[in-house]
Figure 1 (cartoon, rainbow, N blue to C red):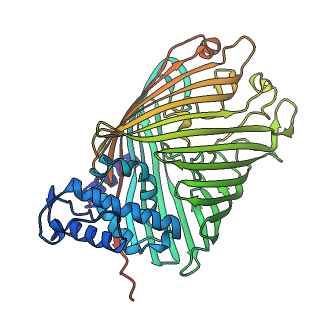
Figure 2 (cartoon, one colour; figure 1 turned 90 degrees about the vertical axis):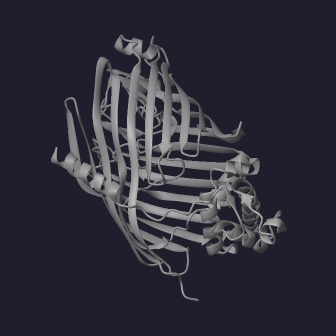
Figure 3 (cartoon, rainbow, N blue to C red; figure 1 turned 120 degrees about the vertical axis):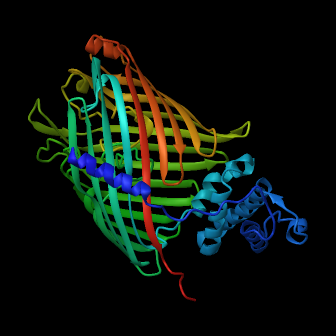
Length: 534
């Protein structure tokens, strides 16, 4: 209880701490004397934008609206994107990118009204993103979330089906952190974590180091960087490797060597041990590599291989090798992602007392599209995911052909954690391998308010004889309100319509309900680096 009060007090203190600088707002009408008008005029001239501010504004001093100003900024950004595509990001002055980023932030509510912005949004935001080298000397703060949640016909501690059972709890994740970047080639990062929950008959709390590492780079170069210490590993769309951000996270005591021999190619070589106490009891090590070749913004191909010995009950010789390829493509307003994965290795079989060879496969294909309808920005999403299974796994004979991605953080399984992987248990009965069909939609109702609705249908590949393969349909509804760049409120309601597999396995068809209200925060104070002397 004292830990809970401590973290609530720390969070309350952080809320009272005035966060970092926020950009000046742009009024509804501006003239050439306003900083925004000046900068857009200068940038349009420097990069020879297709359309520039008219002389009536620049010479005669007539006012221009925020909406029109955003349109001229879009012409600047389109020209900068084309230049980066042709010559690389380094061809554009970093100071100019920072100025464009400030304008982009100040006019972000006007830009989506123009179709040209929606089709180029991802490329624009990628180019405006800050470089990995931080622009501050030090930064201290606290981030995390506070969440109240309740369920029906479900148990939260072990995420298991429980007909006619309901419970609720308060959950917190609070991470105080400190970054120090004395030079552009040396970074120090320390981050603690308090995670716990209380409610009903549940009480849990842990306080420990979450991340703590040193990263060194070759001065004035991105070709080589070494990160040593406790750190997260997050790659791709987190289908294979993520940080469990909705719960208590996942880190490794590890090192990562990043090599960038050319602008298009990045190779990460990594290895380390699962870090306790936030590994959910998993012990072992992870080693491998991840390579990315970027053709242009939004178009890339990635290849990876990992050797993972992590498990809660490890036996000598057990390990799982995961080999995958991930491709992404930007097709105008649409994005496409495909990621096939194959697994080998050795898995202990308690029925035989020995290890057997793993032969499993999985993957997913996702299609997303951004559109503008009636002045509102919307995002549509379609996905198909599959993980292999086997009849022997469904009858508890052997699981060697069942695909496993235990360290994933992918949204493909849904918000509720009813389904957390490609194998699922109801009581003593197992469904081996899954197919997941997803359709989703999100809309920005205002610049601060977003509504999303997603449906996921789960179909088992293999079940016991006489059992249905229909696992069920999960529907997730989420409302997100961004108070500012540091605070957001999230309200969600999820409903899992149980399929016939539940009735066959548990003798009950009761649906599962989950609702939550969450406050997310990231509050910090930082000292910016002094501009480099020329």
